Image 1 (cartoon, one colour):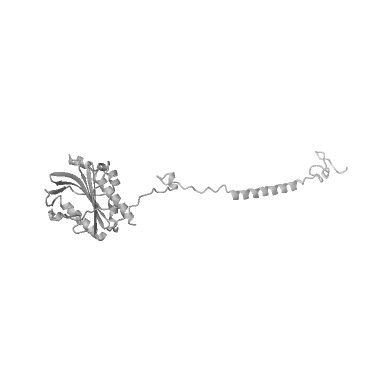
Image 2: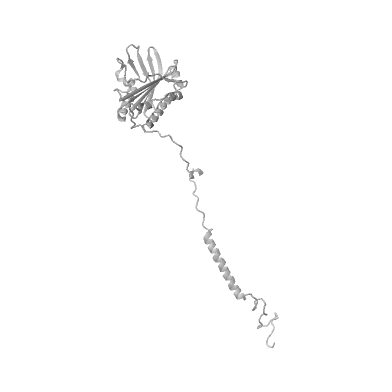
Length: 297
């Protein structure tokens, strides 16, 4: 047609694209401008979704810090383990015994057979259960100031008990003196310790007996729960010498006294060795005292 010059590509400026052609009316595709608008809309939707995901996941947020063990600690520090069961030792400062309960302070045959070498083959009680406190009638101690070293307390106790065990190798004598209260027992025990320290040698004069003398070494302070002392002693009577360990223990309102004597003869130290050592003997009596205090409730 006139006035219409074909363009180099064979189209004319005013010619509409053929129906059905790409981008033309009836092609089903939006024009280029609509396509660009819809593309931005999808980009916006994608951006919003990504933003929501990022807000939920928050990859930039670091994990909760894990506490680092301090210097010298181990991995097990984070999980405490229960403490082992510890035997509770009962206090005895205010423990009060009487005639009915003092018997619980005496050691047993099993204690002796377990803890004393000379008793391992068996030992038996030989007393009649009627031991009495004090010196026999007509007896005295020389010097008189050393009397508590034999009688334990200077005045008759509120209650008293004694037992004797023996076999061919040893004897074990135990006494319990009950004082009116723990305070008076502490005072009597202090006096006893002072007397023992001041009397390395003392004698008991008995009618019809050819002398009875104790020669003692310095007392050893016990390391147990309850105050105690132990000393090596040699008892000489009727020409025989018997080495022994003698101990005293303060438990509440009582003073527990024990003497382990070795009958093996021969060298003094060899004979004492059959009894064990003074610490093990003290420990045996200490353990029995702990059980007795527990039994008081």
